[in-house]
Image (cartoon, rainbow, N blue to C red):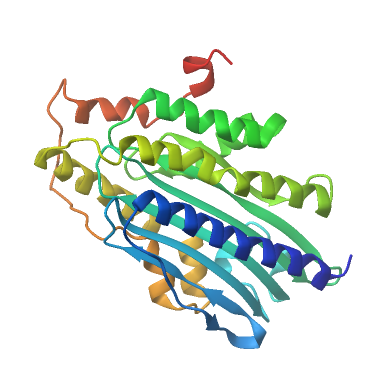
Length: 302
């Protein structure tokens, strides 16, 4: 299959997925709408940042699409595959973040990407996944999230869940970013058609995994102290995006519009010196959830 024959269906799927996720989030929020900024990119590329701000239930959401064409991949995309450096490439991607207003509703992230590199012999791979970052964890939400991910990934779930725990880890804090999900990279299992089918299963189940949780928690009563805790934990989320995340590094290195690259950051966050939650509180209980655990075995008997 020629490179263009691979890129075009993936590009169109990501655009369609962006539209369907934006529609689902607008419906859940019930008030705000996404601002969409279609932008032509160099060499025939295209990007479409879409951002919802100051909604009734969603304080900020960004659902970004990009199709990049260039002469050389940025270092963040080749550090694991140095043999791909210096070659012309195409990359199509969708990446999203949702920062709810209510502290009891979790933050979430998803991204899916496809790289085609025109080396001596053309090379390609998919990557992506989704993860969940609660501040006040509810085990029924965790179970629903991981059940949905397991149904989407089938036999690959255990390995991708482990990869997610390993990647979304704040090494400088010694804690996971949240309760995980699934993550994959350099994915070409079974060839292009089989891999693309797998990526679509992951993408198509994101709203099934997340929106029911958001709808369940978005109107829960909360206190000022719970809001304060949410902002402190958002600081940890920002640390991951700025210090560790390869997607942020890739976006900045590739010369993409900075506003789009950093749209994943929360609208408000706090850093409190040597913050320690009071023992025995729900805030203190969060730490037990920020380590790799077999959630389905614990909560569902799988």
